[in-house]
Amino acid sequence: MRREEAESVALSGGEPARELVATLIEQVTALRVEVEELERRQNRSSQNSSTPPSQDPPMSRQQRRAEARRRAKQSLRKQGGQPGHEGKTREMAPPERVDERFDHLPSPCECGHCFSGSEERLGDPLVHHKWELPPISPLIFEHRLHRLACPRCGQANLAELRAAGVSSSAFGPRMEAHIAALAGVYRLSRRQVRDVAGEIFGCPISTGAVDQTIMRMSALLADPWAELREAVRRAEVVHADETSWRLRGAQQWLWLAASALQACYRIDPSRSQRAAKELLGEDFGGFVISDRYAGYHFLDVLQQQLCWAHVVRQLVEISERAGAAGKLGRSLVKAAREVIVAHRRYLEEGHELAWLAAELAPLRERIEVLLGKGERGRHTKTANFCAGLLQESEALWTFCEVPGIEPTNNAAERALRHAVIMRKTQFGTQSERGSRWVERICSVKETCRLQGRSALGYLVEAASAGHQRQPVPSLAPP
View 1 (cartoon, helix red, strand yellow):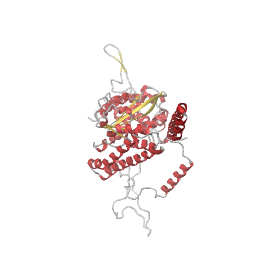
View 2: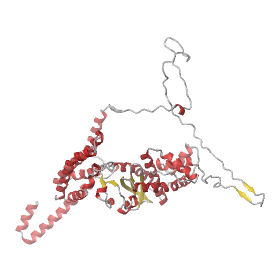
View 3: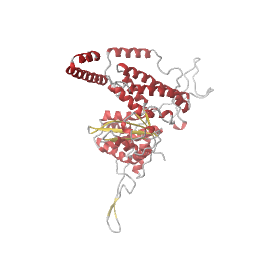
View 4: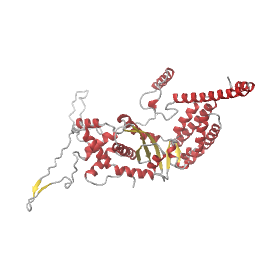
């Protein structure tokens, strides 16, 4: 029964009929909203929400066939580098890095002459370098502590490792750095690190010793981590994001704040505004690029840049709704993708920021008009979304007004990927000490990547400083 028919029946049937019809209409409306919500949850994927691609639902037969056709079209393309692609080749090693040279003469000539090397040389020889690993054998240093009797008083005196500048660890700094890198940079388990140390490095070690070494390295990285957090708090532009974590099976959250050259990770029991303040600082004065999470709302809207990739996915979800809401969503998706295309042109063609702002001005006006229309619409969820985005609309366009700001938060998502894989393979951490290790080694790894330096090289420097009782080198700018 349509609403008009129900109302006519109610008018002809008196007050009880009107109350009954009103109740039925209310129940039908509630059921319709519930069905829409269930369909939304059922259809959630990485294309219309923040759900990772690994959790996408299985494809239907029709979708599988469409995907097969798409891959078939791609397979028709020539394999390998495409026309115009700049190739890359291994650069020839400098002469001082060559350990041994071999000279090869041509095979006998067609006329029967056998070459001896005394013939005329035509140009420089062609050089082929072959890289090989030497047999790995650990260096074992024996420190002998002598006990001597004092000739004056007869007291026995034993030499001390500390006085000789030798640490009590059974492993040297390079060995400790490699253990830390295998566990934290390459995400091997304690048992796998033990196996690599024994089979490849030739160094027998127990799983417990591996864990003790990792905890020693974690303690050394405490000060560099604190310096990274302070550097990120002083940064002008920061990408921020968070992902779930597990501590002894309990829910935790791994937070990330990354600037152009530094990254800091922090594990917190909650996903709250308080946790965001703990990472960024309550008086953070720079710009934050995020995915619209409310935890960053303690910042002024003019300090924020909302991720357009997340906004597009949310708009795609609206476009899949029925009726006027779906039509509005499709218009918003089209306009949002034009924003991303304009920014890509800005980068590829090397325009000034003023060009980008002028190019986006009509799109900005069109999107705000569409959001206003959605805010006044009948679909409650769409209206609430549009109203919320209108309140934050200034944060959508910071990237075209302030230099050095990206329209998406992809940098933070890439930086979190290492920790996400670590969580899935190692099932989180089992102690607070383990959580501190994850914070510190992830911060070191990502910061070294941003700075274009070797994470293993830095860990060697840190371990060497620890053995020599010197301050650990900083990764933060001066």
